[in-house]
Length: 513
Image 1 (tube, one colour):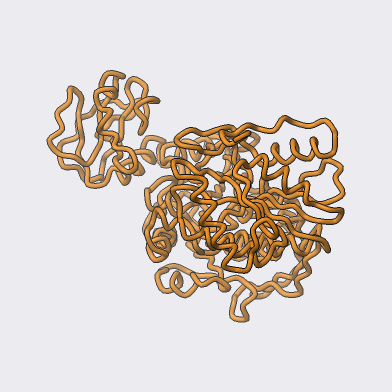
Image 2 (cartoon, rainbow, N blue to C red; image 1 turned 60 degrees about the vertical axis):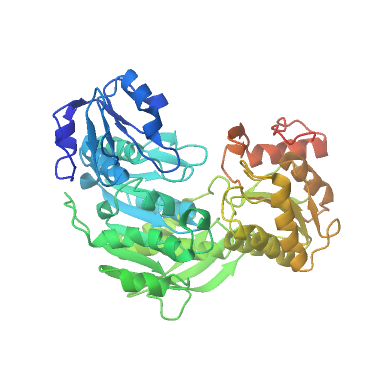
């Protein structure tokens, strides 16, 4: 069993660390078990408020940033609680990243699809690979849910997953890394990665970071970590895979101190896509790199998936020396990603799709892809989250006013904000681009009713896209997470429309209001 002094070895502390035995790690006092080490993180919720409960539940010790804390158990003062949590988590699970080739994928949009492409390519190459994504953690044949609204799990969860991968005999791991995860030092530490991949860095999470520059800085942490030493049992050359077509390229390229690889359609990209064919049911292009050229075909339609597939090819073929045939097979093998341009079929004579697009750029490329699927109307259903980047409310409505024929503005995790107020801001954005309320856009606060309303507008050959939630399994009103799945809601609404068997529509607080 680990001791506190062993776990905090080589980590700076303000006071002496006793050799107390530690059985586990906790940041939530309600989940703490006897013998756990409690980290009194103060971001968001001040965990120091719960120290009486922590002691009562039998914590081994507390780690936090405040001085003068007197408890009946040890309190270890550190400068940065989250840095200590990351350090201790890796040590508690005996540094599993040392046994794995680690690939980190960050960016605003496309992380999950890119991670899945990489995962399937490595699997096709015969390399036992695990993955921690927005949707789940894949460890061999085991699939674990990573949470309702969590992209990057807490550090101790990630290190536990990595340890399970090592014990399952896996050699490679693909991890999605969000800006919040990087800034708060969740997940694996940047220096533990062998390869870093970026999809794009666009307008998102400014509520958390304040400015685009701060958001960019958080993403850049993954790549800056590649130049930090970390001993590996099977070392791979450190590599940063950058999107030459994205505005983030120049800024990231200047900050990276390891080998760089650029991808895109840009003429100066080291890995390029040419001869692109975007069909309603597939995407075809040719990948060209130094000394190779091969055809790529994927069922993941939409021009944006050219970029996602290229990023995966860069990381695997050019970064890890994977055979191009394995890349072809892996990309072709990906049938789809839950909640990413996912078709919902109930026998209707129009196309219905659920997508995770919840940023202005993601909505733009989703609607552009949708336009290529139909000769009829594009009907978009979406909202904008409360307590998040407020500027994107107008921006998303503006995008839809320009690219969709009909928009239905609705709830998407309003949290403690006024839903009517959010919809008012979105409506103002739609109007600024020529939208006419009750003609080209509607406000329908209840998301289930909004989906049903959109389906009623659809004629044969049209396209209805419900965007924003994708794979997520809940929606937040106030401080409560209500069970919700856009795919279930879409099937329920289609079943009612068509008069066929189907699931019940999930109920939200807005239902019947």
